[in-house]
Image 1: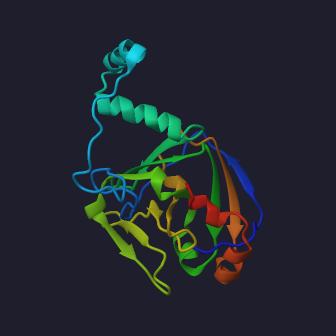
Image 2: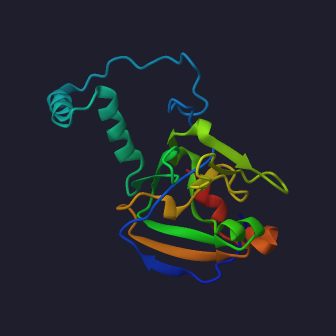
Image 3: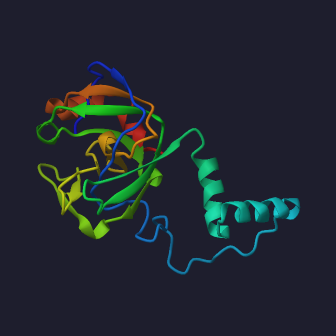
Length: 213
């Protein structure tokens, strides 16, 4: 997709959205391990919770969580504070993902050739906030021109719920209409002049930063 100066931001209020997706997840392998982590990396030993041991045990029991699940919940709450965990997927359900982003989405509406053809409206997130839950083997990718944008979609139903934008190869473009209902509050839509992609991206003040952690 291309980018340009804001062509006119449009705000819409939603109590929900939908999501479907396609493309290989970056930042994590199929098992959810962060990219760059080496196989067989040393695992931290037992953690001394001190006076919090009782609270920790009670929390696990009350919510029926394993120690790993409880730790992940705590880390997510800390690292993604102020964000919402959205879930989504393609139409047939073969591809599912989760993404941490604001409940108030800033969505780009690009008018480049491919975005116009497939009505590719999307918001951008860092790769570290995206996780492909299932469907890696059910994704296929279309590229053209510079081949930097990775237009991934489900092999079964053809829905592109997420992809890698040319403007932000270190992140993901997520289709707000492919998110499950209940986590989106508002959407602001910004028009981007993708017909003059290089000029638009160069002049845009914030788009490159949207995929930075």
